[in-house]
Image (cartoon, rainbow, N blue to C red; front, side, top):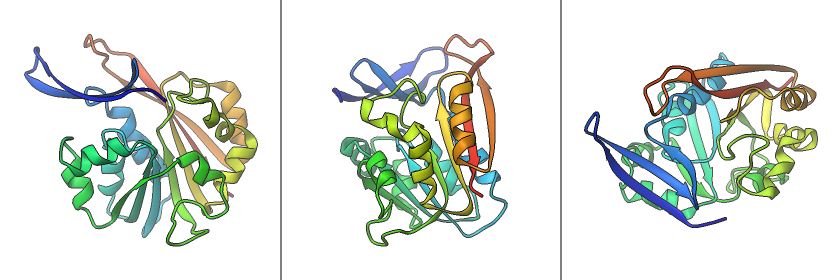
Length: 224
């Protein structure tokens, strides 16, 4: 999909290190903006209201969604699926700030695989337990349901793709999706067609200029 790069730079105004992952000329993630990635985990798991949770995260990135999942005391296991082997290696090698926390937590397993292919498959996300079901599937891979990293991802954001994903959830399980774009009426209708209950959350934060009002979107769907 392009040249993958990890870089660390010093933010002169604060003296803090900023970590960024780029794919070609596109930013996949920056440690400067993590609020919505964290809220993806919190909002998704808050919709469950129970413990002993088995969770899948699609997209590792800098690890902030995964870390927020593991901070929930009700989480029993976490599988993080990422198609980019280098991103997993950067965490395993300790090149990223959260790498040691994620790889050192016995509940967490990092899997190098294609999330979209696993979602569409019968066997699902755990190669050691085919057809295993989960309590929550949280996804932060594409920029939005319309702005994709690769055209083959598009099928997930159609009714058939989401219905297929929902087969890997327990009854009452949760699907949550991060998006860089404002709420999308078309995708909200698609989400409603696949899940019994849906909500859309706008998460605001300061942008790179320190101005208020930048925002991301988190969609949440609950299986019947």
